[in-house]
Length: 471
Image (cartoon, rainbow, N blue to C red; front, top):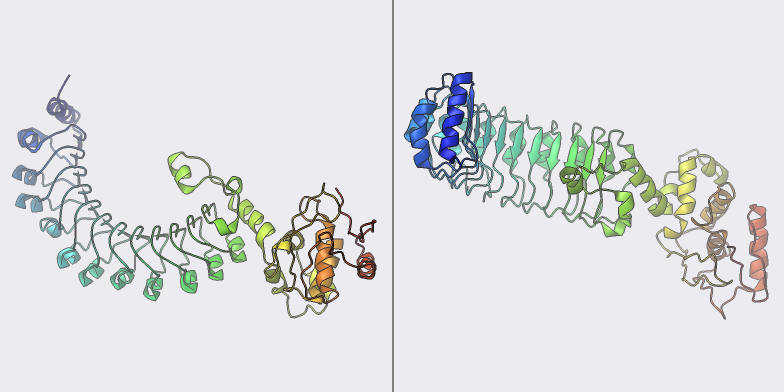
């Protein structure tokens, strides 16, 4: 079995004979001593531009690394480096440098002279601060400082005027530093797994943001000014403490990916249905939304790792608003020219009519009655307090019900009749349909006449006096 060193020799020879500009020596378990012996042979490769030494066992780099002055891309991730030789500063043509998953406690000073660097990755090191000389790297377009121990940024970072991607995930930030908002060309910003409690106003200056990841923080709300991110395509606010969303989120018309998993969301704004380009919506582990897993479909991790297609956002939202829309939300959308119940009905869309009837028992102010179609009369046993609705709303609902065809599994006529029984006759007490608590015959007769006039099937009397429940 050939050793990693022997495999490296073979690859070097192949690169020489093929006149390749790339040399891949990754995952060969090369040590620093191995590299010292290999460098003279590597230098024989003319016009070498890309060198991959990742996933080895390098604890330092030999001074000879400085002879590769034409290198443009150098990959040193997954080693055990803590420092770089002075000669490293001679690699002045470097445009991409990957030092992730090493053991640096500060950005090596040699890097801060490489003014042509466009991409610098220091993810997963042990950085506790960023040198003020970071501003020297004025050509940087991508900077990854994730998984370190940073709490702040130096003012000089604002000199990175070409930066369009910044990753500061898994650090110790409790707020988004104001310096970030001065990086006007940012399109990608990642701050996941910090301790951020709110999105500061200054962040709204980044009108060009397309990707914003705030996963795993301590956010309790999203600001209404979120609509200033007019180019935003992906928003990840999962694993926070959000209870509600601003209506303005529906103005992010370019949004294709919205992740709100693992929050405390109590409801969703209807404006989410205004997002024409939304392709992925993740709402898993928000128990108060009461959306079944089969409707939510695959979580984001399942989509990314197992390549399972996501659920259709439109279908998720249709299900939610069909089952959970407070009745007041529909009535609050009356226009100025709506002056009667008939006009109100005519101004509702077919979808809104269906949603309104479907969700009537979930309106705020009263609890849901459970329909038991196969049970005996009088088996609706949950208390229903319908004090949230006024007589005009009840009359409108009765008329809507008469014009809407829904099957028995969605909502029963009896359930709607109980709503009317509570408010049409201005009884303030909740109705409890139980043995010994039967509405009197006059009540039932008056209610039946009201329902007949609305073209609804009235209560039918039996010996017990209970309203009948059809199967």
